[in-house]
Length: 440
Image 1 (cartoon, rainbow, N blue to C red):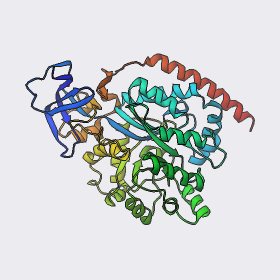
Image 2 (image 1 turned 30 degrees about the vertical axis):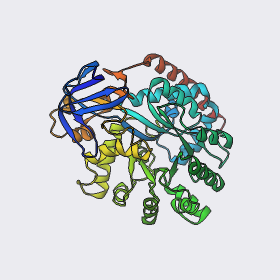
Image 3 (image 1 turned 135 degrees about the vertical axis):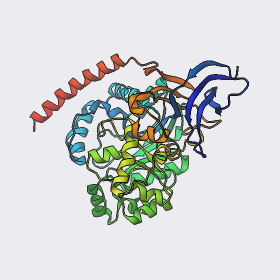
Image 4 (image 1 turned 90 degrees about the vertical axis):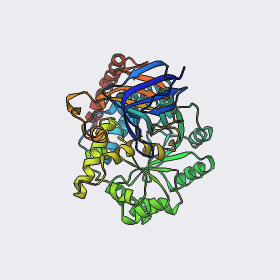
């Protein structure tokens, strides 16, 4: 038999180095890997499972390069509030009460279900109890980069011991789908000694470092008062920045900051919807790309976005830069598709295995229904993917060669049970918040 799974009759968008697009295209999958693709089926094109993708776009799965998946249980809990008020007055007090293994498992499953249903096949997470999220991700079958969120300034919501995050980093991967990271929250919530220690462990183990940098003006002002320099300059002084660093947000940057980040080959994750919703500002994405930086795309957490739909994020990223640059030619739809796929893989060190449709890579593939009214007619698939498609257009999702969603039905997840559990927890959180407000 030629393949385990054969996808045929597709409009195939590969996002490979040639950015090849094939009409009447096919993808052959064997033992979890892509073994053939193009528009000329091989002589032996038999397969155990055949998917007819006529009228659909087949493309690499989207890579959500920054989120906080267990925060889905706080979605809509506190909106239209400045970032530090949102954290100090709402999120952190509730987290102190509700960050438990049981709640982390529930919230992770809720977020993973949402991500798969909107076309995400890999996500890079920052939160507590990462081993719980890893277990959920493994069970459902989604690719993830996970590490413990480390905070030591001020008194952390949930304290991670140095032994725990070091051991997590040193143990490395536990599963083919899970990659380990070290996750110091930010320069304003981590001491200088902790950041130096994190980078030392990262260099010794080769483990990725994932952190927030320069998200808001108040954060930048705080670091300038404390250290006499910008967050980027401070991190560069302590030799924290390198090609194995994923820097999220990077909204408030000077020209010098961008030069430093480019020199150190730091990977950037842009989260436009969260930055807009929290009024943090608009990242200088065009300038960063112009400086040679790899820019990936993330949704941020479901409590600050409040969606995990990467199709929404692509469109926002694209039109936002056109608006602020007053130039409709910047950040084309084709470039944004790359940012949401292969650039995310590069940022996370996974570009050898995912991010594009190429022989030898893992079969992380989504099939997008292009037959709806809002996707008709079609001239350019990149235009449709970015400007017209919605997460709800994703029909089928394949991760590591396994079908995890078909005809919008998730494998291994009872959505009604999941939603009922989340709604029950919401009632408890509302009660806690009400008591908290009454005590003020």
